[in-house]
Length: 314
Image 1: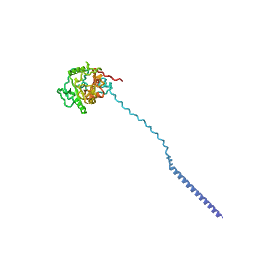
Image 2: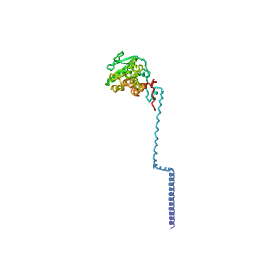
Image 3: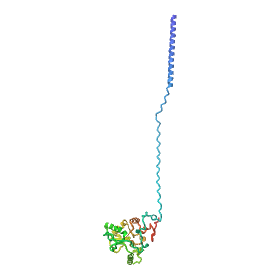
Image 4: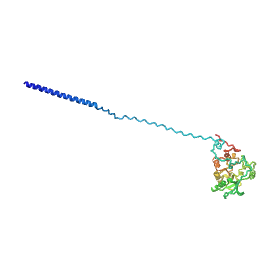
């Protein structure tokens, strides 16, 4: 019995020892595992927080303010120099006219003869003689009483003028060109007697015939042109188709209608729809375009005896 008790005690002791051993091993294992876990935890870096991937709300774009374009200032034009008031351009400007052509105002074709400007007993250096109907187109230089005499320097231009009229289907007659001083003196007396005057002027004070030395016919740079031979030349000629063509085209050949209607107080001569004067194409074109008679044109370049330009009222 005693042996059994001892055996039982031994068994109990052994069992307790085994339990202690098991408990100790379990504790040792748990402690080691915890230390490894702590060490692993300490060795592994803490994961970085995942950034919030939700995009921030996009602010509405601020509209770009478009600046108003700055206008590029136009360059100021260089002011034209004011012309000398006594120059042709300055005189024309004062009258509201365009710049006149650059011409030699002392050249022969601008010689002025009228009631205030005499040429005395002037004789042209060379005359030329044209067929009065332009049926023959030669220019002769020997005296021929059956032809129209003019200054030789305008003969070709006058012939071309007459031929242009004929080419338009119209008759033309070179009625009267050059007259000598003596011939003009005789003409003056005859016309005065026929009209009952002594000074060659009508009731308005305008010349119907010029004294010798004051006639463009003595200068030989003009011609009375009609459609046919007319013993009396008067205002009725303006109704002919020939006159109307000559008036429209005269400047193309260097001629002007010398004594136009409405300019009598300036020219001093009655209206003559048949009297054409040579001045050259450039001058004739300017005078035609600006409705100037010869006195008005010449006054743009120099003072004209007997004529003072009237500046238009502002």
